[in-house]
Image (cartoon, rainbow, N blue to C red; front, side, top):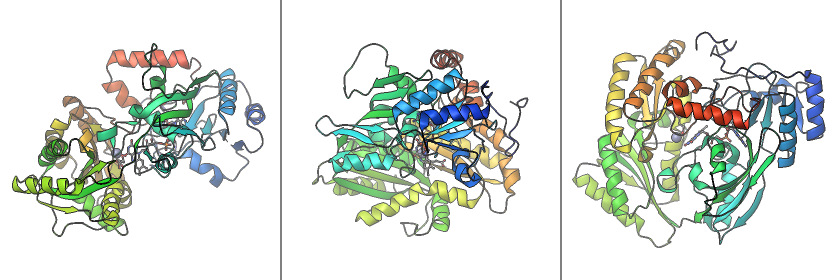
Length: 496
Ligand code: FAD
Ligand code: 2HG
Ligand code: ZN
C-alpha cells in the first residue's frame, strides 16, 4: 500500500481511484438539482460547518470532500440520481447515521463524489403484527424501528450502542451485530426482503414478507453487508418477535475468559436458551468508564480481573428468570466460575449495568488514542486467543494497554488497545500497522475473522486482500463488475 497517494491530513494511503466524470461540477450540480428539487442538494455554497458532518467519519480516521450532499426524499429520487450519476460517471457514497467504524460512509479526498444521505427516507411503511413483520425505509433510525415494533407489542431485536443515531440502511449494509446476536442473529438474519436502487437506476423491489421462498438465488443477500458498493438500499421488510416481558440481568465477576465461556454454556442449558446477551468486560473497562462517564460506577464492592454482563429474557411476563439466574450464579460460585455478582433488582440497576457496557467505546475515546480490532474466533477458542494476544501485547507494546471486551457469546471481541497513561499519543498510534498485523495473523491462526461486525469500509480493504481466500475475492470482484460496471457505487470501499 505504500506506493499509493496519501490523504493530506491523516496521511493514510488512498484506496479510492475515483471515477472521473466528463461533466463540469456546475453541469453535474444542475443535473442533480433537477432530479432532487429545491432543498434536495447541499453544495459548496453553504458554510463549511453545515457540510462537515457528512465529510468525516465518527472515529475521525478520514476527512473527505464532496461535490455535494444529496438528500433524496423518495426511492424514485434515489433511482433518478443513480441513473444520472451512472450515465455521467459520478462516484456516489451512501450515508446513513454515519456511525460506521471503517470509514465506509465518508467520501474520498477528490471532491468529485456525491454523498447520498438517506436520512429523509424515514417512514415506517407498514407493520403486520400477525405476520411478525415490519417494512421500514432505510433512513429510519434503528431506535425508531425498535419503538414502532414495541408499540405493536412486538420486538425488533437488533440493538447497538449507536441505536439512537445509526440507520436501518447502515445496519443492513454493514450487517450489524450488537448485543442480541446470541439469541436473534446478525442483521442479515432479520431480513425478509429489500428494496434497492441499482447503479443503473433500476429499482429492485423485493419487499415481500415471506418466511419461505426458495425461488432461485437469494439476490437480496448480496446487498447485506455490501457497504453501499452494490446498490443503495431504500427500504427493508424485517422479522419481528414477541415483545419481551421479563428480564433478569447480572453483572458477575469471573476469574477469567475460560470461566466466562463455561458459565455461558451452563446458563444456556439451564435457561432453555433464554440468554439474549453475554458480554465480557475486563477490569480496565470498568475503571475507564467509572473515570470518564458521569454516573457510571463499579456495581461490585471489590475489584476483580474480569466480568460478564449477562441477560436472560422472555416474552412471558411471569417467567421466573430472576430465580433461575440467581441459582445458576450460585452454582457458578461453588464451582469457582463466578467470584461475585450483582443481580439487577429493578430497571434502574439494569440500565446502570448496560450503561457501563455501552459506554466503553466512549470511555476509550476520552482516555486517549486507541487501536481497535473487531475480531471473532470460535467461542471455545476465546480464552486461548486472549491469552496469546495479551502476551504478545505485553511483550511488544509497552506504551499500550489491552482493553479486550465484547460479545463473547458470539466469539466476537473488540480486542482494543489504549495508550498507557503518560504515553505519547502519536508514537502509540504509529504502531498501528505492526500491531494490526500481529493480531490479525493470530486471528487467522485461530480460524477467525478480522472483521466480525464492523465491516471493511475503507479501513480494512488491505486486510480483506490479505486474508480472504483468492476465489472469494475473485467472486466478489465479479459480482461488483456485474452490478456496478462503471464503478460509481462507493468507489474504493470493500474492494479497491
Ligand atoms: P453509516 O456509517 O452511515 O454507513 C455504513 C456503511 O453502510 C457505509 O459503507 C455506507 O456507505 C453504507 N450505507 C449506509 N446506508 C446505506 C444504504 N441505505 N444503502 C447502501 N449502503 C448504505 N456495530 C455493530 O455491528 N455492533 C455494535 O455493537 C456496534 N456498536 C457501536 C457503538 C457505538 C457507540 C458506535 C459509534 C458504533 C457502533 N457500531 C456497532 C458501528 C455502527 O453503528 C454500525 O456499523 C451501524 O450499522 C452503522 O449504521 P449507520 O447508519 O451509521 O451507517
Ligand atoms: C461495541 O460493541 C461496538 O461497543 C464498538 O461494537 C466497539 O469501539 C469498539 O471497538
Ligand atoms: Zn461490538
